[in-house]
Length: 150
Length: 150
Image (cartoon, rainbow over all chains, first blue to last red; front, side):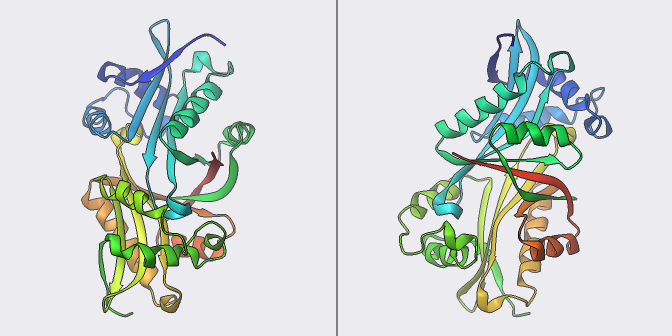
């Protein structure tokens, strides 16, 4: 596994992040790497919210992975704060080297650091490789994830 | 369906909310309605975050339902902000009267008002009645929900 740093995403990382979001059978249908306009205000909204942690993994100044962690306080489970992981992507050139594992472990440690006692995520039902990956990291597939497009 | 109002939860609503969270086969194992101490700081953390909308449904000054909506900005899906619904509960006396439907519809409308283009939630795989309920409201069970306790 190549060495890499995890750091907060900067505005200049937006193209690299969007390219990774789009480089995927599901992402290709819904992202627009040739039109970054919708991503700029979204980035700003994320950057302005202290509970959003949009990060990139960087190796030799190149962005090779991304992950978005949201810290969510709540009353359920005796007042458990939870970490929600979204939008995990590894650059196509860097897959299969354990970077995804390191990135998820980063999110778990950051969640713990922020006082979370639960980490959760959903994965598209068609991504069966991802499901094994999360189970190997200790996650349990206990829930059904529902989505409604507005 | 009895008329009811949806309003932000106040500190004095904590006992009623926790009682509803606990009055459920899963909740009974993990909530502590006789010890509200862990819920007070959690409530404060929710109340201090403008993206958290912990609400109660009230009928004749009685709390009969609760729902927690989190607004989550993000880059994925062309910069889609999403609404995440958690901790939906209806008081046992009031179930089967459509209150759950009204509460979820409130969360969908509030998400729309806040610029969301996606609403999501997870439901424990054992709650098959809840799954039908969400599908009837237009949600699609497209994802697997993973949890990791810390």
